[in-house]
Length: 265
Image 1 (cartoon, rainbow, N blue to C red):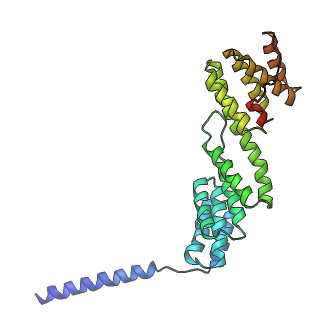
Image 2 (image 1 turned 120 degrees about the vertical axis):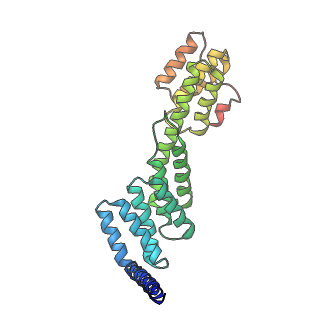
Image 3 (image 1 turned 90 degrees about the vertical axis):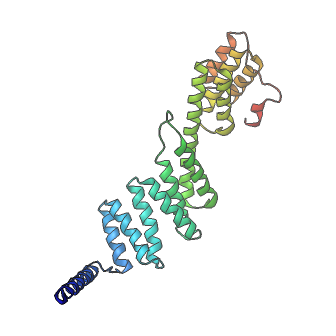
């Protein structure tokens, strides 16, 4: 009986010692922030962006109150962006903006977030959710940091984004027009004129309005949209097409008093 107890005690001690040995092997070793950051930066330069992002995150995890941690957050987001891990980049940037809204990197954080959406813009035949998010993010950047170089680039990109969204509206409008759903088409073409007035799609939108109004027999509105088209884009092919449509019905372009178009042109 006594020998059995001794064996039990021996086995229990052996288990405890084994556990201690394992714990010693798994002991967490903290590294200096600069060393982790340097390792992360080397991985980034080697285009190992996923590994780099994890290491930049490790800087903050081990040294959350160091200056390296703030730099690490931005670089983690940038590494995710380079890896086209846009959701991870946006989450990291949102966290940075919430924690450090007044930091000197804040403008860049807003800019990089906008780029995450901008780089995901797809052709107008597909869903434009990211285009709309890009528009919102670029607009916010411009409003918050209007005098920065980021805002200048954002302004150029915003023009392209708006043109893209206008193109989507035109595509839908042409779809309705082709199927003779004229009222639905008119709503889309009006949206282009009202919301995306500075885009390249406005001349066609005015022509398509002329076409829809004539199809519905609303000649006065057709003459008005054609007149606005001729006044603002006199040398365009779209005006020539509108003029011919009117001429076929012995009509000419003619401005309508108190037209809704007057507030945009």
